[in-house]
Length: 73
Image (cartoon, rainbow, N blue to C red):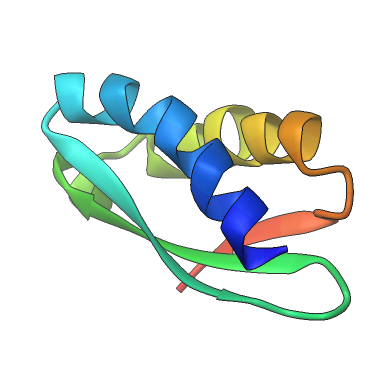
């Protein structure tokens, strides 16, 4: 499942990079919890929580149905 998650993250990286940010995959648990770290401008942005849930989590759930939740670490 980790490979599928990485492929899905690659779909949203260009949008994050356009704002000076990136996302790094930290881990994927067997129960579908994906841990990521927002980098660059996204790491300190006041909208980071919305980016995580409405952007990263939405794209991952659409492309990898096994994903239950995305959390920032």
